[in-house]
Length: 232
Ligand SMILES: [Mn+2]
Image (cartoon, rainbow, N blue to C red; front, side, top):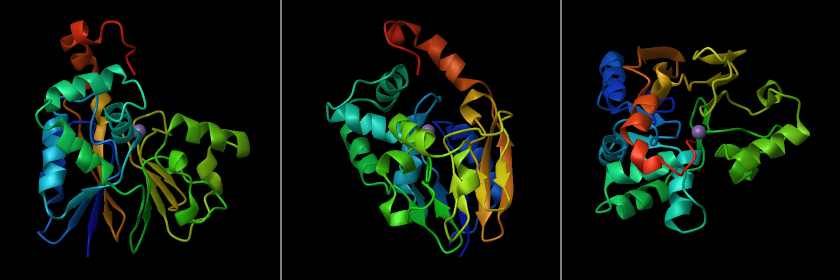
């Protein structure tokens, strides 16, 4: 079976369609997003709808899904990107989208790779990883920075290659390939970079260019809404 792992989509529905067309998938290929389906992009609602309604598509949970769940549960205040996404999704279906997000796995253990959105603590078994670490929460990053030299992934010791999103470790909107052991596939589509997929089991990269700096455009479009909130 083939698995097509897609980097941080952040509401970039058009580029998602571009990437799927370029990948020319078969009906039995599995499509998995590395997390951060939503926020900062033009059409988070359609991205969620695609992953929710496509039988062979799934996602792990990212820190942005977590932010929505916590806001909905009144455990955290939203940032501007969640406020905009909630308006895009509309109040009618927001609760059901929260339900979908809440059911996402925090990591996946595939035959040929381990998937997490954020980080992985060296020396700790997959099933014992801290939630804040694998989801890429700020608290998880602080925890790792206190214990390990940076970049942490040079110490990665899992038994399969690790695929992650959340950060552009190259600072060039490029894929990170660390010794064929750790793959970082967040190539910053929502900021004008590209959307990247990794086809398993061959670890073949496929990417499409972003159609623009969508977050900059969206912040202008919703300037009245986000006034008074920070722009995270
Ligand atoms: Mn993230």
